[in-house]
Length: 242
Image 1 (cartoon, rainbow, N blue to C red):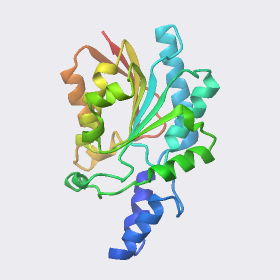
Image 2: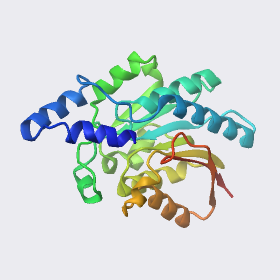
Image 3: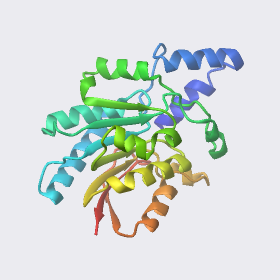
Image 4: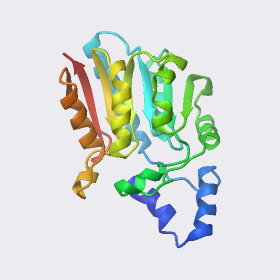
């Protein structure tokens, strides 16, 4: 599992204490090898298919934004940029929310290591640029979700409809915040992607899956139909507001 590889890199490389902190800082700044957290080819293919499905049901090209929660280094955001360009959906905005400090301190309460998956915003921009992303087309919003998922943010960035919502924030609590923030921006149809759907419940923990189930119960006007996903522990749904 890709994220297990990333965890192993930080916590099982034989470093402890100050040495581990130095390694983590170097890694966050893009100065150590980086293992992509999303399989780029498969993700691109599934996103392309999902956008085609969205266009088929709405009868027009997707006009809302692609919004990602949990950007890290930017592999999936890079894929999204190229898919959108190649598909001719050049009007889609690309927006990424991330602390750019890794998982929050509260992550320990849900079985994660605070700071995991950290990439500084500078390292992320450098990665995006290196991989052919037009940085003028991408908005990166830095900060913890409780600070950035607010009405002020909606106004500051003039957030309108969201055509694609990509959730890669792992934690139940963070996913719950994201879904609550996104709800007013979901129109008649949207695509929602969960990078870590199934394997947390396999270990008796709660995560994105349980947060989404609670969200659907609280929003009975929304129906979620599954679409092909890019790996077993991910899920993609077509949301329809009835």
